[in-house]
Amino acid sequence: MPRFVWLGALTILGLVATACGDQCGAAEDRLVPMSELPCSMTNVEGVWESHPLPPIASEQCYWLEFRGCSKYELEHSLGRVPSLVVGYTSFEQDGRFSTVGSGNSFVVEEAGASTVTVRNAQNQLFYLRLVLE
Image 1 (cartoon, one colour):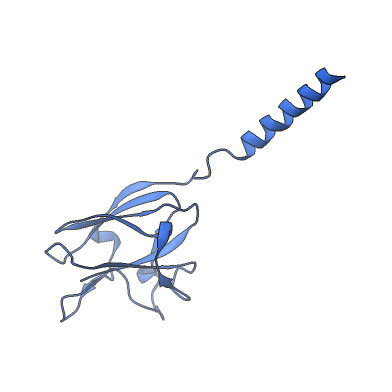
Image 2 (cartoon, helix red, strand yellow; image 1 turned 90 degrees about the vertical axis):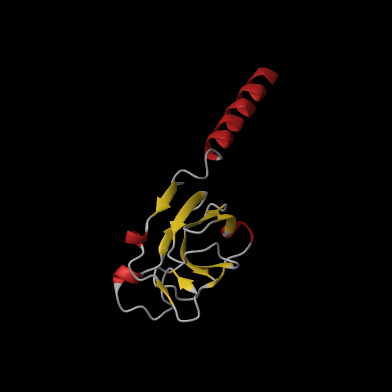
């Protein structure tokens, strides 16, 4: 009888290990060129924004899909290394109900004169708006 208990326990352990496999199946690391940010702009104060705030009238201005467990290198036209990098995350493509990205949902890895690299270290899909000053 103990042999059957061990076999049953190993079978259950195998099923649990399989179910707890890679939680980041749709992860991606990629460069986001300026051509993918058609609504980005630099205002008169020199603040660069990747996307507008809601309400958003055009689908082409929807916020960037920010997949879980992914790293994005976004091109910007600020022309200098930003002194402030702020990310806003939302569960909605049009940015409704957004909040300032924090913790593992928005990690700044590197900021340069032409790109900023950010990472979503959670296994959660967000939509991202990036603001550089």
